[in-house]
Image (cartoon, rainbow, N blue to C red; front, side):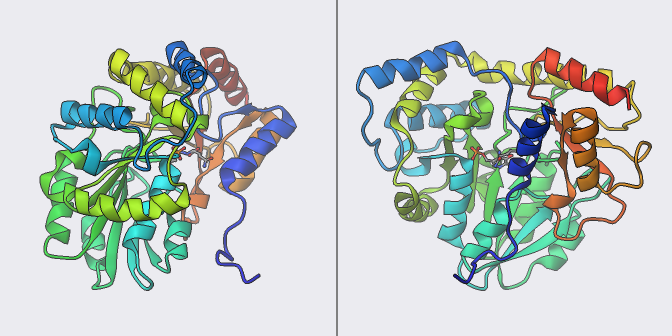
Length: 381
Ligand code: PMP
Ligand code: GLN
C-alpha cells in the first residue's frame, strides 16, 4: 500500500501514556483527568441504557442535546443559533475537526495553522489534498504575529485554524485579535476552524473570546467543542460543531459517512445533565484554577521556570536550568523513566521546532495527591 500519510507515526499521546504505564510513572502527559466525571452524569448513562435508548440517534445528534448546546451558546456568547440547522453532535472534537476540514478543503488548498499546533489538523488537511502553511506563535507569549499572517495569505488560502484556549501553551486569543482576523479575511474566500475545546477553562477572571461572539467571523466558521473536556469524560468521545446553516449542510454530508452519528445514551445523559446542572460550567474555571495554582505553587520550589497558564489544563515548564543538554523529547523520556513523571515534549507540535526549545507540557487535570506527588518528584531534580 502506498501510504497516504507517510510522515505520520503513532501520536505522542499514545507514546507517552504507554511509557508512563510501562514505567509506572505518574501520567501528566496525555490530557485527561485521573478523576471521574460527575456521578449524576454517569448514573444518567446507566439509566438511559436501561431505558432502551440504545439505537441510532438522529444523524445530526439528539435534539435535546442540540437544544442544550444552543441554549449555552445564547447564554454565554449572546448568539442565537438554530439547534436544528447549526448544531451537529459528533463522536468527539477530533472527528468534528476531520469532517470540517474534509468539507471545506479541496486539493491544492492552503490551510494556515499556528505552531505549536494540535496534532490532528495536518493529517486531516493532507487527506483532503490540502497543504498546511505553518506560522509560529511567539515563543515568549504564544501570540499570533498579524503581519506575518497577512503575508502568508495567498489566493489559495482556504482556511485558518484557531485554537483558543491554546493547547499546549494555555495562551488565549482576545476580542481584538478576532477583529484583526476579520479585517484580514474580509472579501476573501477563507473559512475558519475554531477549536474551542477548552472554552470553559480560563483562569484569573479571563473571558473566552469565542468566534461565536463575533458576527462577521461566525458567518464563515466551524466552531468546535468537546463534552469530554467539559464534563471530565474524555473517554466518551462526544463533541459538537456550531456552524452557520450552509456550512453545517456541508459538514453533515461528511459526518454522515464518517460515523453517521454519535453514541445515543451518552447524548441523552449529557442533555439531562446540562439541563439539571448549569452550574457545572460556571464552576469549572475555579475548579481547574485551584489545580493549576496548587501545581504551580509547588513547582515554584523546583528548577523549572514557567508562566502560569491562562487557560486549558496544561502547564508549560522550561527546563533549561536542569538539563539544557537534552532536547524536549529526550527530556520527557528522562523525566518519565528516571523521575517518574510523564509529560509531553512540545517540539512534536511544530513543523520546524525552534532549536533552543526547552519546554515540556504537564497536564494538571489530576487529583490533589497526584499533583503533590508529581511536584515532589519534580522539585527533587
Ligand atoms: N483539539 C484540542 C486542542 C485538544 O486538545 C483535543 C483533546 N484531546 C481535541 C481537539 C480532541 O477532543 P476529543 O477528545 O473530543 O476528540
Ligand atoms: N488532547 C489531548 C492532549 O492534548 C490528547 C488527545 C489524544 O490522545 N488524541 O493531551
